Length: 315
Image 1 (cartoon, rainbow, N blue to C red):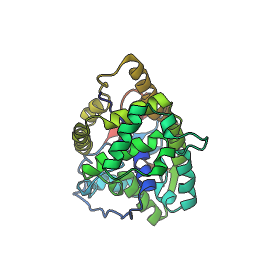
Image 2: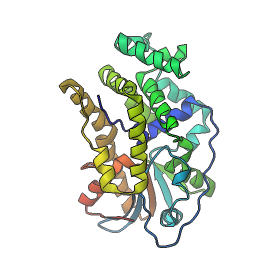
Image 3: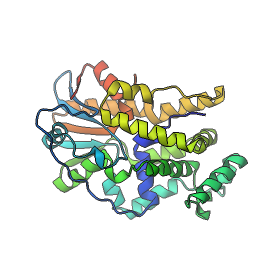
C-alpha cells in the first residue's frame, strides 16, 4: 500500500507535535545571500488583475538547519509586507494553555467509546504494539482519535529524518512577525484543522493509520526525497511527486483517498485562493505562507490565482 499523505506539509503535523511534546521552541537566525539572486524556493510574486501585490511562499512545517539562511529576496518581501498571512498562528497558540487544552479535547472521545470501537481489532493491536515499541503509548491514548495516533507515527518519521517543527518556514516568519509587531492574518485556524481531521470517517481514519504503519523505512526515504525536492525549488518536480497516484489500493480505498485529498487539499485550496484575492484587493501588501502542497495541481494556489487573472511569477 502506497499513500502519499500530506501531513508533512500541513500545519496539523507541527501543531500536534506541539500539543504532544513540551519541547522548547527556539528561533532560527537568518542570514543574507547576495542581492538579486533568485530565491531557489517555492516563492512567487502575485499581481492582481486590478492591481495589488501579494508574495506567496510555499512552506514546509518541519525542517532542519540546512533551510537557513533564507534568501534575501524572500526576507526582503517579508519586510516590505504590511501583514503576514498564515494557516494558523501557532506561536500565539502555544502560549495559550487553555486553547491547547480545548484543542486536545477535539481528538478525545467523550461519548463513552474508545479507539477500539472505531478501528479493526488487528489494526488497533498493531498500532498499539508499535507505539509501545517506540515509547509513545499511554493508556490515555485509547480515548484519542486515530488522527492522533497517525500523527504520532508521522512525527516519528520526521524525527528519524532529522526534521523538526522548530525549523518550519511558517514558524520562522511567525516568530519574526510577533517580534516585529507585524499584523498576522489567520487564513484558517488550528481548531478548524483539528475538527476536519477528527471528522474523518472511521474507514478513512483506519486507512490513514494503516498506511502509516506500512514499510516505515520506505516512508523515511520518501520523506527525505520530498524534503530535498522542496529545497530544490523545482516546482515541476515537486508537483509531480506530490500528485503521484497511490498504489496498491482497492476501489473502496481509492474512494476514501479521494475523500481525503478533497478535504485536506481541494476544499481548503478554494478558501485560500478566495482569501488571497481579497487580500490582493485590500490595498495592503501581504506576505502569504501556506504549506507547499497547496501550491500544486489544478486547485492549487498557483493555478487558481493564474486562472483568476493574476500574474503569478516564481521568484
